[in-house]
Length: 90
Image 1 (cartoon, one colour):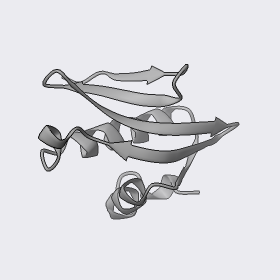
Image 2 (cartoon, helix red, strand yellow; image 1 turned 30 degrees about the horizontal axis):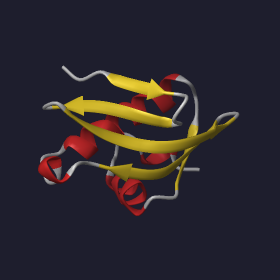
Image 3 (cartoon, helix red, strand yellow; image 1 turned 90 degrees about the vertical axis):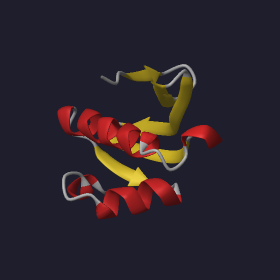
Image 4 (cartoon, one colour; image 1 turned 30 degrees about the vertical axis):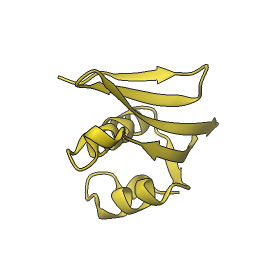
């Protein structure tokens, strides 16, 4: 089970996987969530950890009726490829 942490002070969502942190830096303005950057530690790249983070961020956005503006190339590609969350793209 994965728990998404909203580190509001650092303006980033964090997901702990195997003792390491995958994160998405964000900016929030009203009902708009802008994903600025998504990063996974080298040991977690290619494991699906960043995708899991994006799924949890997508769920957070759906629950709060937010639209997502992906600035990060990874976030943009991931959202566009996701049938469950592509409708959140602003």
